[in-house]
Length: 258
Image 1 (cartoon, rainbow, N blue to C red):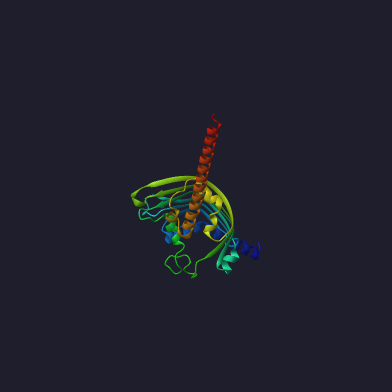
Image 2 (cartoon, rainbow, N blue to C red):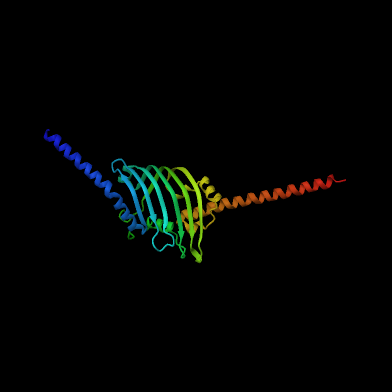
């Protein structure tokens, strides 16, 4: 065997070992970083990321609440698949994801006695002002912008456990939501009519502005409230129409009597 062939084999073996090491240590690194940033106990079963193609695959991710919460569960992620544009990541201040699929069996939103929710606290960890300790955008000096060209979300179950005010109010919603969105750059774009209608139909009546973080919670509260208001108006209209028809039939019956 020639020297060039031997060198090629050795180089190929080194690349293979480097790839195996990358795959082996990446989940542990990501788990450690997420725990440090959020304070939540994050576990990842499978995490594969190809830095040359931008392909990311996550399976079996679970996040559990800090000990300050009365219930331990937060998020179960069955699978995440993403195709990230490498050029957007390297050369611009906006991350472009060509395709993102998120499969979530269960999300449990827990609200503590002081009114803080786990979802709000988790999201706040990623939206701290630039330069704040632990803020993901601190090194860049400004928050990251993003664009998801195609986003598919599958959410099976939503549980809301409210421990505020010295009481325990818990409700589970079997949503079985499977929705595809296009060109998403703001979480509020997820509040399409079908999604809002489903949440209202399944009985989501809690104060969503307090359960969910920031503008998204306020927007969802307004959207669900708007659906409720429209529904109430329709019911009032049906009631008034029914009363009118009943009165009309009563008059006809009285007229028809000899």
